[in-house]
Amino acid sequence: MPILLFADLLTLTTNGGKNDASVRNHNEFYEQQKENNRRRIEEEDILFYTVQNEANANRLRTTGYPFPSEPNKSDIGEGVYSWETYEEALSHKSHLENNRGVAGLEIMVLGIKKGVFANLLQKDLTLLSDNNREIWHRRYAKTWGGVPNHGLQYIRRANRFGFEHYFHHSIFHLLKFY
Image (cartoon, rainbow, N blue to C red):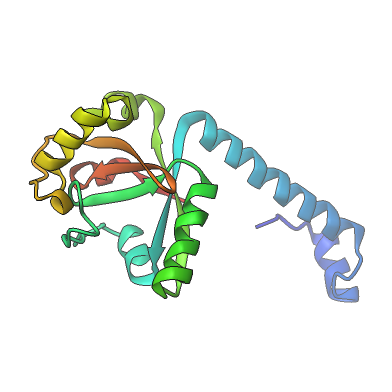
C-alpha cells in the first residue's frame, strides 16, 4: 500500500484522486516496490507453480493438511505437485478445465530457498533411461501399482505438460506460497 503524505491526502480529498500526478507517482512507487520484491524473491528462492482448486489453495495457505491420498493426486507420495514454469501450469489448468470440466482453479506460486532446495533428498527421473524410469515407477508410483516409500523429499519428472515437481509433505514447512 503506498504511503500518502498529508498534502497528497488533501489532494485526494479535494479532487477524488482523479488524474492527480501525486497518485500516479505513488502508483508508480508501489509498482516499483512490487517489482523489487519479485526480484528479491527470485534471487533467494526457486519458484514453482501449482494448480489448485479453492479448497486446496486454502489448505496450502495454512498447514497443508490433510494432503490428498488418492492415487491420481498423490501418485509418488502425499505432498505438493507443481510445475517448472507458469506456462506449464497454465497448460495443465486449461486441460483440467477444458477436458475434465474442473472449474474454480487457480495457479499458485510457491518458492523454496535455493540453499534449502540444494540439500533436499532428491531424484530427477528425467536423467534415468526409459527402462530404469519404468522400473522406478513400477516400484514407487501408485498408478503403476507401486508404493511411494522412496524416502525422497523432492522428485522431478516429465509428462505431457512439461516438468512436474513433487515436494514431500514432510518438508511443507520449507515451502512459501506467494
